[in-house]
Length: 394
Ligand code: PMP
Ligand code: GLN
Image 1 (cartoon, protein in one colour):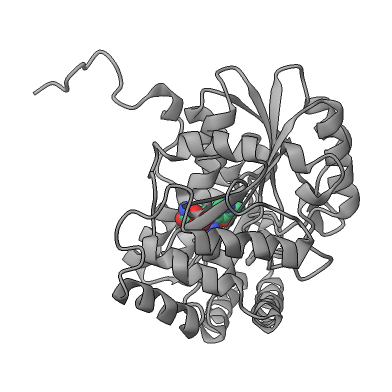
Image 2 (tube, rainbow, N blue to C red):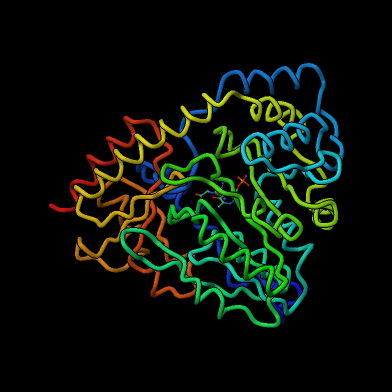
């Protein structure tokens, strides 16, 4: 039987360049081969018991089992606003300036679909998280990557390159700090320069800050806190990374009423709402004492150090991340140059799964030798992976 409308590809042409997301591909490879999965970024232990219990309570008490309100349950919106105030001194009105989404993923999609039109240009830091490229494409806009380049052991933004990427068609800067996959944390100086550019060229900024509580060096500074930025910035975060409940898919947007209304216009036709009972639990999580956030960060700092040392001993060049729970390594010291081939063969060669950074680049050559390893795993699992990777040299 011929496919209906065989004269035209089934998949919308905007999506044609995107195959299966690398995270699904690599987790399936790990499951198939039994390799240790340091690919997709999810923790192998769940978040705080108290938060899980709060979800159970909400479920049992019948809170959130039916459609929650479109913008999110008031308890969570209030907790998100309080979180922004407590950690960054940013004031948002929980009723007008906060929107709960199905993870950061939906927040990104809704923001881009709401704010972009066909032909608009979006500047994104390269390597970029894969959903950015897909959502820009779904909006019919064009991505303009600005590549973070290795410099003194970290991937850094070239501010001149950023400036020259702006054209009259640029609508929006899409930022991500702490940055996945490189682990770069944009400094106050860099963010100030980006902010000045956004103001000068009257650009919107969408900033993905899902790793806001995973900064090991320096500090996390939301760009919305800089002068002139609150009114042009859509800030996105989520509970998945901060509280180790990636399956709950509770994310949020904070911005001005005008921007939140725009994002909500798109969001209401994506999921409408999601994660009812979990919203109540995340409200409780956001109010956890500082000791929770510090202990979480320190636990991951120790794991970062463990994995970085292990990778260096295995013979790759390590870019020690200032934030996130990922470390990028350059495989060239092993005599290898193709990260994609390396990751496809790694389960067989060493029983470990990692992510090739090349898939996050338009300039694939710039990303070819880099590979990302996640360290949000139990210590014993990281140690076992290191033991396996040590065979690469032999
Ligand atoms: N942005 C970045 C940079 C990420 O690494 C991830 C993965 N957590 C997301 C967005 C998606 O977040 P969520 O799982 O909350 O949709
Ligand atoms: N954010 C996770 C990562 O970077 C993956 C999330 C997903 O699979 N979409 O690994």
